[in-house]
Length: 366
Ligand SMILES: [Zn+2]
Image (cartoon, rainbow, N blue to C red; front, side, top):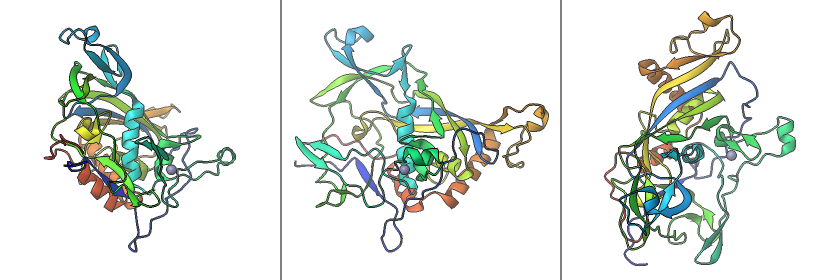
């Protein structure tokens, strides 16, 4: 493997104390979904995802090009994206996965969903997780007894047998789809890269994140035409949350790139090493539900309506937009910095996910 391009990604190390020892996971009891908690935040965030480089979540189905576009040569095959009524979709699960991996990296959270056994060049590679960072896997008995403790990411996004308290809707592309050539991706070479903190033992050294690039690559020897959303289009979706603390809501906002001091873009879908899938998030509206008389909201920040609805017992919503929304978000984010966020990790990750960027996508072997 000669002439390697610079790696298209970087590992974000796990949080350590000043003597270099890994910090323990910050486990606590999850809030639960079954009851509205007046002291917590429940509501909905409207999300606009701005596409900066070609973005697609593949459906797994390949069709004849002539079936979906007139301009494509008759015998050319096209990989299709997930869509509904001719509109491209980013499934809520893809978006959630992308935001979750950021959240995991900037909090003291477990290593989730890592495939322990890699098949690489026809060889099985066993990957080990550092001591104490195993995925949270609560026992059914403990769940029944409400005796579960989970890491910060599992509390919010869910763990095995425990539902999360945020859910992302599918995001729908509002513009026409396009078809572009997407080159085949190279296999990772784990042993060449600083993927392990302990190469002999195959112990993972950190969490892998791809950089954003100025453009995505659409040429190469091998590859296939692919249905995708081009830059300057956008996806619209939402996320609902139940019983979040201030710091948890703030942590979620930071993971969406909304911290004014650490703004960044997300990476979603296929082709991350070749610059695809760069999206920035805009939040222009948030609903906070308040039960009549409950008062979970700081009066000076959210001009709430509950006094007008004292006869009702169902949650009423407060819509936040503009300056009040901005202030509210910053207040949540500050709480997250006090209680949840690991500053060195956030700083490093924000540098990797910085957008706009002047990094050019790797064109050769990486
Ligand atoms: Zn966990």
